[in-house]
Length: 489
Ligand code: CS2
Image (cartoon, rainbow, N blue to C red):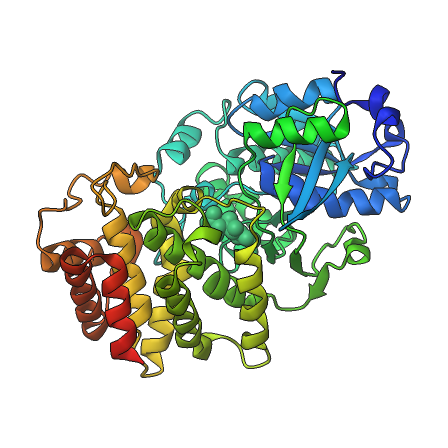
């Protein structure tokens, strides 16, 4: 089978959408850091829409900050890859052409810095995951004890972090008299742009206080809310998509048709007309972020914990369980008072349920459970504290915390191994094991500052979590959830 690439695109079946522009004329206007599946199923697609409409100034140079795998798969394909959008029985295929070049930062950091220094580049966007920000959960300050940050402060010429790369590029642009680019964080963190500006400035401050001041004064870091469910691509996906294309695509992405992207319109040097794809530009994204993090991501993390412990491998399978489904509805109702008034929560959650039910996605609970300790603070603890702050109890969010704590015990309910993929939590040497009492376990977790901050948990929620964990251990997770539901109904 021939490989997907510029030279073979004409062989694609008519039903497969493909770039409508001359890729040789692509000019790079965006550098993206972290070229994972999410970027390729989200921002790169809406940028492709702009290129299709003829605005050739917004080609993407994308960089991996760690692994060469995306580069190695896509370089022989001229950066082309397939997006497979799936909803139950239906699937559409589209070849995306917005990524003109892929770099691998550890292999050649100077090439990446040079790409960012090109004055045609007006936006550096990033999907570097929660981990990439190295931010303290309570203060939002850069954690100077983070190993990658420590490395880059000691060896800035061999950068490992996005911040060090950005710092070099911004410094060089400034020295050359070029305007700075806007830095667009596309990670699932509240106030992602503000957070980025803060930690980037703090990183720069250690090296060059004047540059830190320049970042604070001159570099726009718009916040945005990103949404599209993108399960990890499997070998079976690669084979099936290549068969449909009649060409081999070694690195396609799979996603749901739904997407949302709400961006603070703060791009002093211009931006693509992403609104042509339905992207929303607003002056304040905070209400959208809270809605999405608390209703979608909070539910995801909860389903992942409950589902894994009770043996469900995918979100769609887990929520067919009547207890988990009922729990989800009650969870959303509990969170609702923390969502901004203008948002139609019943409508949003009705659509969410249909998205979670999508049988074609096979979105793995284990994928969502990755790095859960970095997700729980903004997804579950923040809305729990918001409820407590308005005098409301949070028995279901507390149960979700207990389910997450149970999911860190290393085995599922049948005793089968349930490996964790959460290096930050695994590095916690005092992490209690399954033999510690529920009280000791909850005490240890809630005073673990990287997750709960110095604030811990209020006494009423603490008791809810402790009772839930002890019921989960005694009765099993689903009966304990049913009991909690019946008590809080
Ligand atoms: C998920 C998200 O893996 C996870 O933690 O909750 O990646 C989720 O699928 C996206 O935020 C949806 O937009």
